[in-house]
Length: 196
Image 1 (cartoon, rainbow, N blue to C red):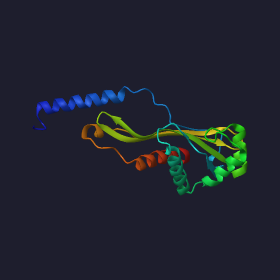
Image 2: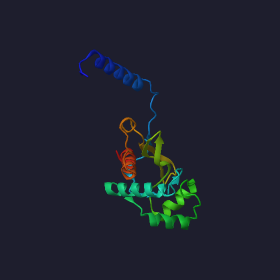
Image 3: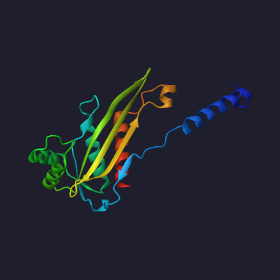
């Protein structure tokens, strides 16, 4: 079919109108992160990343996401991240029963034991394969929050979702991006929201 034919021009016009309609009908977007304007983030030197809650079907999802987040945050060189083993010992010494959702007293205890200026907690909401008809792809969705240890206040929150079934996957098939790449993309997004 000739790309300049009237039929092809009409089809292109329909596609462009549909694309404009779909992009213009969205609700007002909600910010995916919050930074407390009263806190000086440059004063934070060390951070402890607590075990994450896991709402996904994969039992190892929270550990995988936490490990990727810690490694990526350490590689920036912006902050000292307390090693996970030290955090685990601190949790045991403090007697914290729910480390993924600590109370204000728990924040004070663990921060004093591991000598952290802030604690990061969070939840893995989705991790793994999603399907739509015959198409499947990997997806990860994570939400994190940071408590300042001296005030026990939440000074930063952010969420990131990466992966899922794209229009190209629906039209052309394929299994989407590997889980490792999707997880790294979500973690990079979270670190950008924290540091930049």
